[in-house]
Length: 213
View 1 (cartoon, rainbow, N blue to C red):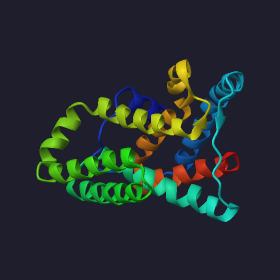
View 2: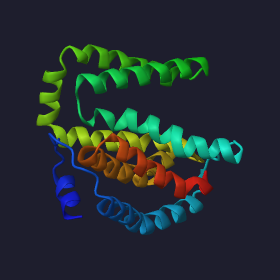
View 3: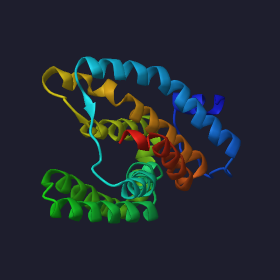
């Protein structure tokens, strides 16, 4: 865990990812829940006071399992963790995923998300020709880049809750702190071991949470 703590103090890109260490992997998983437990209890108490409830996924059990354990972890990791390492391959994959999701949201009349995703897809294409320069800039300010992605990942989860209105919007950063924390753990695993293992970590966490969605 000392390496993880040191990494969080100043995140950085590794040139060569390590072979997976499953003992360390599950130590990180246990540590996440150890941190989450008191934070989660506090958030639940505040949510009950202000009548903030989590939205439920209106699906049968099997489709819900497929969504939570496979579709969501893969899509979210490709969107938020793949580009923690900038290269042409990752930019192409990111551009393709955001374009597909933009089209999907357009068909669902979610125009706001469709425009954002389409813009990200175009930016990724534009960055392709300057991937080395972009990587150099990001490397210089990597801590900001790493935590910005973790925070954005967390903040997007506020839409999973009902009852947020008025001054309660100020509560959002605290409400989604578990997801921001999750983003930091996922990011570290992606950098240290690779995108496949951040997807697996994400799947395991979603497995334990499936009864609440």
